[in-house]
Length: 179
Image (tube, rainbow, N blue to C red):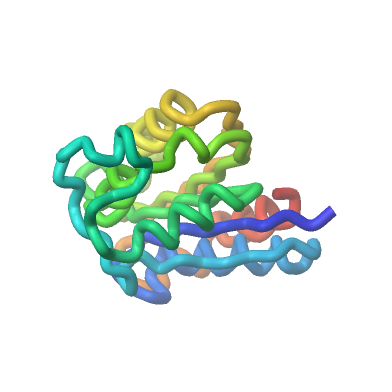
């Protein structure tokens, strides 16, 4: 049975290391007959949350940007892949801003399988755990009935393209196939 897999890429560079792993995940998913869509956050207008609280009762944000469309896709998705480069031991600002803006409909993003893709110049997976904990705080602690299905760690990836000759490429493909 095919699934709708939504991939959220927070890479600031198309073809950057985390974005390349997204594409490899998608390739595996398509090879297994799944429907995929990638949202490249850099190409979207996503404002910072203003903390106004209007969405708490209306379930709609007062801001007019691309988040409403993305939230609709998240609600419909069976699987969500969240990918970010790791900067100073945390997810990048694009991903954090994106997560903050899910508030209007986060209670509807339930029953999903989640995968995380993170890349860093660091060579130690242990140093990437704070970024993973940030993802888990959102997906496991705040969303209902979600499952963490896999993590792809792209280590030692400083320059664009460094990820291409690493085991993370095969891991991304294989996780895409089983998603």
